Length: 256
Image (cartoon, rainbow, N blue to C red):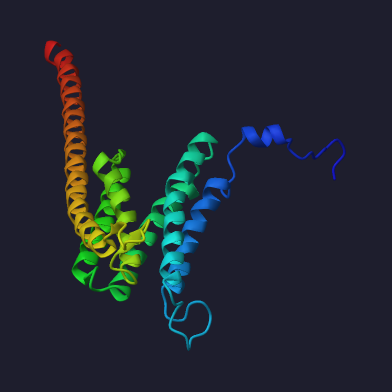
């Protein structure tokens, strides 16, 4: 070490004032959501819990565990964004991982359901829902390259709620057609038609996905058209100024 050179570790206050660390609490929560994708695939496989010779857990426990895992993963979708804004820990890694985790969870869930419960989720519905996710991702990428963003609409938020209901109900409908809550001695009670809820939720999810994709595309088209108009206006203004300068430069030579 050269004389007079003193190396000190930065204080915690300095570290807090600096650039936020990439691997913070919100990003860790996002990573756990990505980790639930292979976990959900394993839970809904015939080999769950451990023995390949078995055919899943009996009594509906397999469906209940899978539903609980998906609900917890869906809760983290809003939790990581809230914590990132609240703690001011928005990072480039987080902006990359958050939409990636969402798309992975949605696509994995519906691909699994096509094989797990095909009477509720036919392949064409999964293609529409997954295609919508790719379309929105592509539009957002183009918008970011053009320098503007497409905000999530109320339809997109409604789609997220219906998505959770559709996936969970489709998983549960694999085991039950209906539930009887608060059974009475006479054999009555509150009947929850699990199969019917799953069918309606899946088809509503498909309709809302199409409407949401159209809404995103219209919003993208308006902004890209406005950006193009501004670019044309700026270009014509620059050309007008250049033309005026050239004309001003010619005037003295004509006078002389």
